[in-house]
Image (tube, rainbow, N blue to C red):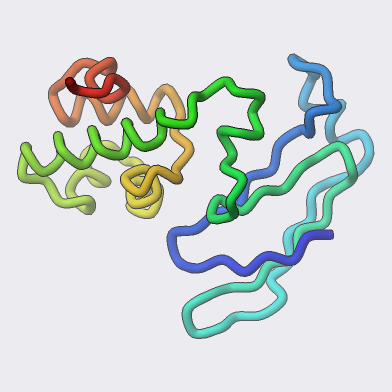
Length: 147
């Protein structure tokens, strides 16, 4: 059991732990039982959640010192979140778009975009493509550090 307090814009990530074989079917992860998320308390600025999972799943709060990218066996470099954050911010400002406007155009939730611009968000390939189209740039422009 994990007890986490989340504030607006923060998230939790649940994924198979390192002991699981890569490419395992999702159904095999849930053979030992479901994930249960219970709201324990509601504070003025945060919600306390209880996350019950079996031992083959890891639960990570994105604001902890261990970043989700580090837990994914080095598939994402440590700098990539910072590079993406800076590039999304720079291109958004250059296009004179607010986060809300970019959220409406891309249909990516506002709080996800906030997390991405802080270097904490997890983004799908579809969302990355949507961002690049909305900002009228190539996807690689979001992922490469300018020199």
